[in-house]
Length: 303
Image (cartoon, rainbow, N blue to C red; front, side):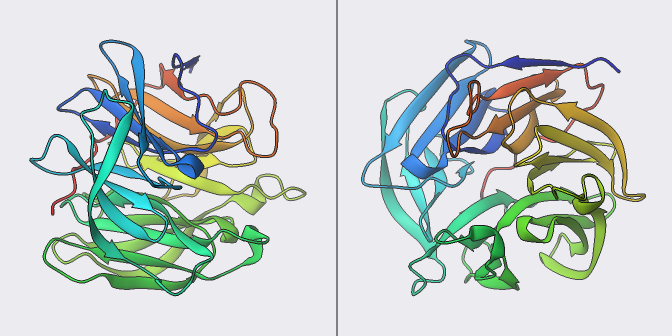
């Protein structure tokens, strides 16, 4: 298979994260996490728009809100807030807070989050001081409109990649600090998870320098795509066998997350980071074509 990796124009983010494809606007939304900036890549214009969220230091994810075209749920520190943005202006503003988690843990923040196939919020936290790869102060949560936040899992290191296979009734979750991808049975009607099982162990790939799994997505055939924060690659994996189907090499080291998009949902968008003075082109956002695979569109959050 010959795939092609190309940079998106003016797509830099120091810590790019949270790619989400919005079908209605044919746009990829993503964040520059540690500076509170949200991005929109317009497919037809081949252009990236960026906005600073007023008064916010962090923007850890961005999820369009159902039926409210200028409102987005964004992770700001330990809060999930509603942000107003027209997708073009250089400034966005917080309208209200949907919920807050771990309010007393000032060293923690929300990290990756997504919507499940029914539009519920699922996401988690991490400690962002000290050696983040050896601490277990995070948690994984679920939330749905009209309800309270519920804890799905405790003692999480760095809550990261999330993906759902509705046909197989599976939920895939990455805690970066475990170097593993876990599969859970998932009740899509209730959001309940059960029966965790390791389906991909990244310590087996390069045992001398274990890879840190970060963001994740899934294709329509049930293969998962795992970004590696210190590996320069995205691994396409069959979660039933745990076998690597393809290693997609990206021309920088810190690969943070992935999402399918484009008019046919067959373009894999890849966010990266420039932490600790990486060489150019670290922090660039990429598109990968020619994978002969399709993903699912991002689901808006129901509030």
